[in-house]
Amino acid sequence: MAKEQGRKLIASNKKARHDYAILKTYEAGLVLAGTEVKSLREGRASLVDAFAQEHEGEIMLYGLHIAEYGYGSWTNHVPRRTRKLLLHRIEIAKILNQLRDGNGLTLVPLSMYFSNGWAKVELGMARGLKSYDKRQVMAERDAQKEIAREMGRRLKGRA
Image 1: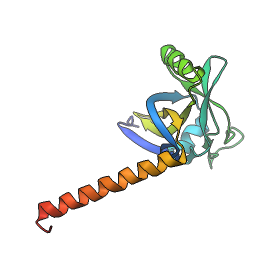
Image 2 (image 1 turned 30 degrees about the vertical axis):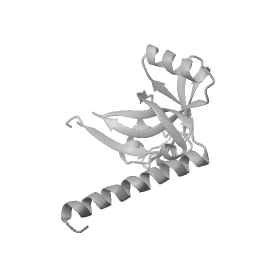
Image 3 (image 1 turned 180 degrees about the vertical axis):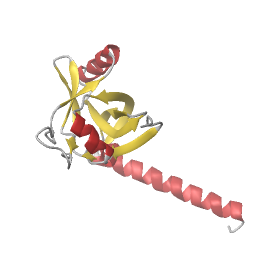
């Protein structure tokens, strides 16, 4: 069987991009069981309640739901278990320093994908948005859409 090339999206966390201001992103590998990988290849994962946190000097992913593999037997995995994230030691140190500073930052998984056959998670260093921040972002997005729409009309000569 030929090795997979490119990037194949498994799951994304759209709500995280709505509820948080993403300051920086990191790519991390995952420690997975065999049936978890097979289930991910079927696209059966959810990042809705997932978050990353420090545990004994390492970063762990909590609340990630990977559905049980349909053809698994007694070797099947637990759907919501704590999973270790694979990052370089220097990256872990930087992330932990930012989280420990107490600036209200959190580590949120944004998407999960296969990159050249390896399961990866995109983590975002995020700060929670207030409701008025969300309204402001929505107003800016609507204004940009209106500007683009008007520019399109002018280019077509309809204005």
